[in-house]
Every structure is written in structure tokens, then in C-alpha cells.
Length: 211
Image 1 (cartoon, rainbow, N blue to C red):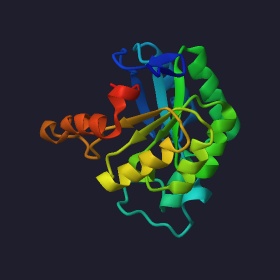
Image 2 (cartoon, one colour; image 1 turned 135 degrees about the vertical axis):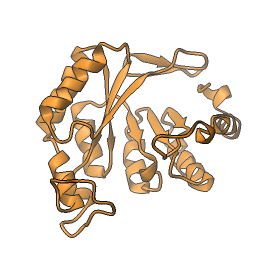
Image 3 (cartoon, rainbow, N blue to C red; image 1 turned 180 degrees about the vertical axis):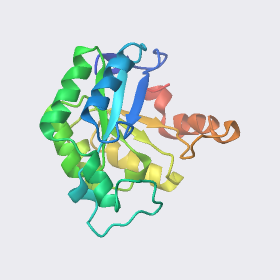
């Protein structure tokens, strides 16, 4: 049995679920609120807390307009990503706070620069959003780290998932492939739990290490 760890949590066939509290961008650019989420999640019994790490200059431009303007504060997408940024020292503080509370710190990178930052502060594993599944340069970077990878599939075709899985397997990283539905809130008849069986069979996850 090829078990591995994400932080202090064992991952293997038949193990207890790894419970990750998704914060994403809900801190709205407030470092204080981000830290408050860590304190709140630590009281829930979750194993890990996950944010998103965006660097405006690495994934946008000052001419990048909103596709859907949801912000009453920011004029452009670049402005929004800029407001969501934390410095490396601030991210390190969030990481250390989570660890002190007994949580595994995770954050999804949306650029190689963001992945480099997270690697430097000691992020235990990679969580890749489905929107980045075709970002072969990012997958190459994280693959070379040999850290576990949690790969989302919600915005992806089967062909795109297959290509990403083969690319990651080429590096030998432990891989968790997540069945996701990028629709919020997700109707019960669109969750697609049957796809988990398809993934297990296609990629032989039961034989390897994933239930």
C-alpha cells in the first residue's frame, strides 16, 4: 500500500477523509480576517485550511477588465487581484499560524510566481484549481517539487484531465484527483459522484493508493 502524508494526515485506501476548509478569497484582502479564519477553522476539527495565492502582475494586466463586474471597490480584474495580494512575509505568517493551530496550510497558486512563493514558505502540498489544469508550465514546476498534488477537475474535459494526470505521473508525485462541479451552489443531481468510480478505474487509484 503506497500511503503518503499531506501535512500530518495520512492518505491511503480506506483512510479517514482529509477535511479541508476552503477559504479561497473570502478574506477580501484583509490579513486580519485571513488569520481569523485560521482560528475559526482550528475549532472545527478540520485537518487543513486552504487559501488562493494570486500575484496580479503574474496573471493579469492593468487592461484586464472584469468579465462580470462583482466588485464595488475595484475597477479592473488587475485591481482586484492586487487588492487580494499578501507579501511573502504575510503568507509565511498565515502558514505558521495554521501550523501552530494544528492545521495543514494549503493555498492554490495561479502562476509559477505564486507557486515559488508557496514553496519558499513551506506549503506541504499543492492544490491546483481546475482552471489551471491546462497550465503545463505550472504543472511542470510543481511536479519537480515531488510534493503531493490535489488536482481539481471541475472545469475540465476528460481529455484535459487525462493529459494533466499523465504529466503529473511522469514526475511521480502522489496525486489526488478530485471530482468537482464548477457550479455554485451545485444541485444534487449535478454532483456526479459516479465520476469518482470512473477515475478510480481509469487511473487504477484503488491499486495505487487512492480509494
